[in-house]
Image 1: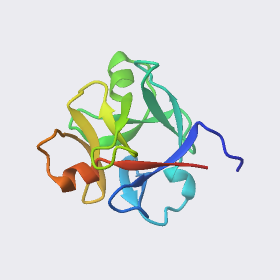
Image 2 (image 1 turned 180 degrees about the horizontal axis):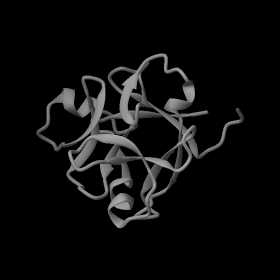
Image 3 (image 1 turned 45 degrees about the vertical axis):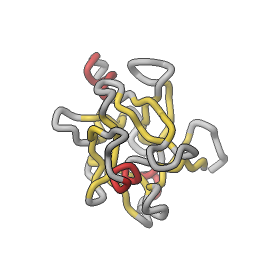
Length: 145
């Protein structure tokens, strides 16, 4: 596939061979993702704020990564509601563990960031006093393809 600037995969900072991927509509980090398209996302202007981003699945067009009511990170079909738009929008900020990488700050709950725990993604409060492990779990490397 020809490289396009809006298509990305995201590797875990502390498990660099593990990529964000969807599996049964749950987001997680795994190595050797198969099919590879499960780990590839179109980065689009945020559904709630164009200066932020939303991540649309490549192999499930119209499905976006979003924070759900229990702070899980899931792949859900766009429904056009204000709540969906806000929960599927993230601010890309300097990585908590490495400022040259990225962290995903929730638009709808700005003290919450995407992190992996036991390889499953969730939104958790992260701040300066969070542990180094938590900060690493919330840091990702962008990969173009």
